[in-house]
Image (cartoon, rainbow, N blue to C red; front, side):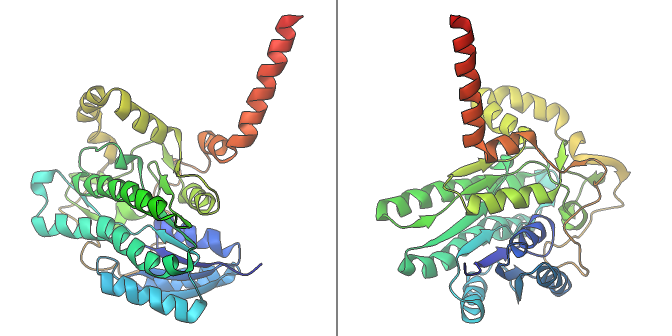
Length: 327
C-alpha cells in the first residue's frame, strides 16, 4: 500500500501537531503548513522519527495564494494529495466590545477563510482526479456560541455553513470527494497560552478537558470512514443537542457560568498580544498547561468510533432479553 499524501494546516501545535503525529504513525507523507519556523522544524522532526515523511511549508492560511502555492509545492515534492486536514485557527479571548476590528478580522480570516481557502486549493487538485478527502476540524462551538469567543464561534458557525453548502454541491456533481467535519470539545492545547487574550485571568478550555490525541484519532478516523460528521466527547453531544432542544435555557446557563468557566484563578497581567498577527517565537508542542485535568479518552467517542460493533452488541442484548421474556 502506497503512503498517503496528507496536508495539515495549523500543524505546529495543538490538534494539528497531534494529527501530524497520528498520520506519521501510519507512514504518511505529510505537508506541514503553519507560520512559525521553529514549530515547523520540531513537528517535521517528530514526523520523521515516527516513520512519516515531512515537508514543512511556511504558510499563512489567511492568504489564498499562499495556500495554493503550498498545495502546488506539496504535490511537486510528495505526489497527489490524498487527504487535506483543515485545522488552522486563532482567536481573541475577550468580550466583543474589547476586540478591535482588525483583531476580529484576522481571527476570522485565519479560522474561517483558512478553511475555505484550504478547501479551494484541495478541490482544485482533487476534482480533476475525482478522488480525495478534506477533513474540516470543527467544534461544538460551530453549533453553540459562548461568551468571550465571539470571533472563534462566529468563524466556526460560518465554517459549518460553508461545509454544508459545499457538501451539497459535490453531491450534485457526483464528485468522489469525501468531506467530513469533526466537532470537538474543550482540549488541552497551547492556544490558551499563545492566542490573544484580554481577560482578567488566564484563559482555559471549558471543562471537562480532553487531550489533543483524542481529537487526532477522531480526525484520522473521519478521513478513513464514510461518516459525514463525527462528534467527540459527551460535552460536544450535550452542547449540540442542548442547542437544538433548549437554546434559551443554554443562553441563561452560559450567561451565568460561561465566563468564569473559561478562566483559571491565575491573574493575566494586562492584555496578551499572542500570535494573532505574528507567529509564536518558540515551539509550543501539542499540549497546553492542563495535563493534570485532561482526559486521554472518551467513552462516547469509543462508542461513536465503533458504532457498528456497539449496535450489534446492543441488538444482540435486546434479542436475548426478548427471548428470556418469552420463556
